Length: 261
Ligand SMILES: Nc1ncnc2c1ncn2[C@@H]1O[C@H](COP(=O)(O)OP(=O)(O)O)[C@@H](O)[C@H]1O
Ligand SMILES: [Mg+2]
Image (tube, rainbow, N blue to C red; front, side, top):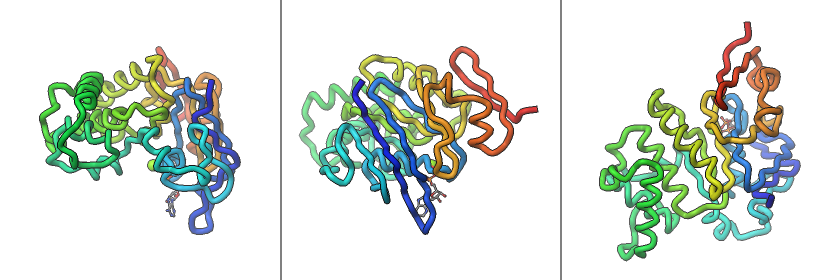
């Protein structure tokens, strides 16, 4: 399977501290990764590297076969989808749902070109339907619930048919119903054969959708464990990652964790 991401001895140094500390990591196109770790572990920084937004201080990052620093990121970036709350804050509240998704085709936030190709509009409507947003196409982004806004962000990041999809805490701040609805959609998407490689950041094992295959556990910029969920996600690796004794349970492909007794 072709490599989508390759991190080789990657360091990101900020204020004399290695916030990513000699990380080796490989993602191939049939894998769906969850990145887990406490606040400040470096999860968002890793997604920013994978989205070409920052460069490593040392080491090599290769994305879709292109080595960061030796390639034109403006050609690479349209091949990557990225949804995060930082990005959502830049979406104008008065923009309609259809336009938020449609304008992704031009890699801009906000509508600037009036003569959209029909094909873009048809694709946008199909993506909206896939993420259960078709009824909301004409609503403005600012009037949506948190859960609906998250689905719009993901729909927007998928609109360009990316070869790599990055999601930074897509289920954060959602109520139980909205979280479960989104996890069901993410799980269905993750299991579809045409879906690109995915990397999803979260704080909670409860938020790992069914269909995700691999996990990267990070603590203070360092890799604690990485690999297939069944091997790398254990009470021991979670205990080391979060620095407190954790017990882990799995049921029907979903996980729960709590303090070990
Ligand atoms: N530009 C920056 N300058 C200084 N410190 C930073 C910068 N970006 C991130 N950090 C620090 O690096 C650590 C990792 O950040 P981040 O990747 O956002 O963690 P996470 O997403 O896992 O919570 C944090 O301690 C954060 O404060
Ligand atoms: Mg973060």
